[in-house]
Image (cartoon, rainbow, N blue to C red; front, top):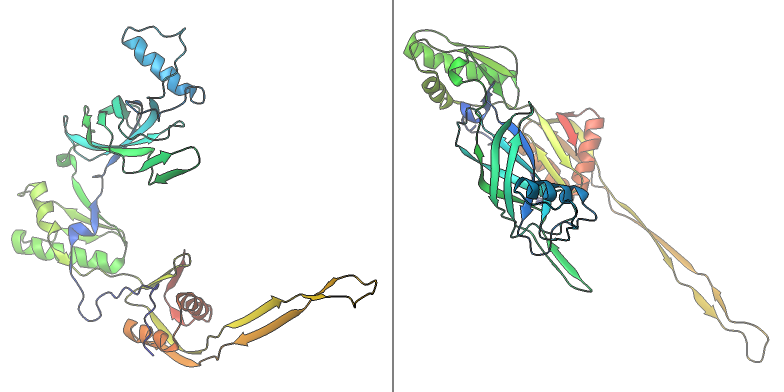
Length: 365
């Protein structure tokens, strides 16, 4: 019986034909990465959905400091505005980004604001982990969520207290270091594996032998491949050339189970030693059927409720089947023959792993 499990996803890694992948899609260059920025700012122009200053004293202090810098003294005044909100602004600055480059920023409410929709972020310095300011963010906020409230009911969709400003920050300081200063290129695999690292080194050496008559790459470990840049070629052009080389990445045998959604992902190289298994469900139903007992006429008896309990037990027939997985297709075929629901598949896989017949790592989330 070939019964497809609707809530279970089997990802087949291309049964017979293995897809080649570009090197630049499975590696990153060591030292070339984004850096995180963070800043504290104020959002203005909200339609009465901002922070209540009584519950958010930091918003009031920020408003007072901002107005004082603009020559307005409000230290002895009581601010009652609800059109402002304190926010945290975060962004990622890419490697080698130059001054004047624009980057996206994310704005998140810090106080008790109900929504940031329609607000505008004032100029907010963004600093890195070293304490230096690298960018300044400002602009109207795009909020995807919304909130509508009445006296008896309110509706909220998405997250109205967080939003983004596309190209909302200008880089004012460049990160230290340049690509030309990297003497040794180290390619780091996103999914570490010795076979994949070896194939990457072989592909790069095949290219450099053809064009430069020398081997430039060697495997350091399962995570990194070291490449020597040819002296007669620009580093950026060399990275572009080897990035387009294709390899067949290898992956370890894994089975990932998400018990909350009933999702099962089985890797291409997962195999199961020959086992015989059965799976059946025992259902016990307990039903309370109380009965009212009436006293005889003209008697001094009282109406009483007599308890009555009905218990039934049902057990489905256990279908004994032999499952062997010399390949992913045969494993899926064997599990489908038993006709299980997602919860049953998860229980079976866990039991097979306990028995030592599942030749793969079982990851339960």
